[in-house]
Amino acid sequence: MDTFFQWIHLSAAVIGVGGMAFLLFALFPATGFLGEEHRNRLLREVLGRFRWITWGVIFLLLVSGLYNVRLVWLVPWGRYWEFLTIKIILAFIVFAIVLLLTLPVSRFKWFRARRELWLSIAFTLAMIVILISAYLRRG
Ligand code: HEM
Image (cartoon, rainbow, N blue to C red; front, side, top):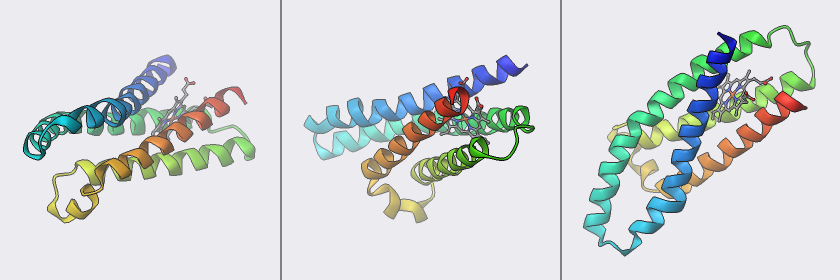
């Protein structure tokens, strides 16, 4: 069971962070040659589909992450827990940014207006989350 949840956690992280990298470094720059209308239409189609992936990824990361926390529950308080707490806070900030970008709520339009900036911030934070996770495992 432990291996199963570890697999879920890793797979969700790979799909979520990989998807963000694809959008930032491949899709957004590649649509630059399109006119405003076509670009918006293409991005709406792609992001509309990717939205469901991100929600699924967040759900799986939360469930498998909580399972992982249960596994390390008996580790004594110290550096490990300090870094794990920082990691979880950063992960929640990433989730919040992604939800504000993907929830179809018109009140968040102002936030979506700077989509690339917020996605870059979320991607950078997610990379830090992965670095901390690697440290927690090996450190
Ligand atoms: C952006 C979201 C997240 C990403 C990208 C992420 C990524 C990772 C990665 C790559 C690992 C290493 C797994 C391995 O070495 O097999 C890991 C481990 C872990 N994650 Fe996450 N995670 C995220 C969110 C969360 C959340 C929300 C929680 C808790 C609620 C959590 C709790 C844990 C725990 C406890 C471990 C085990 C650390 C250890 O090996 O001692 N993660 N995570």
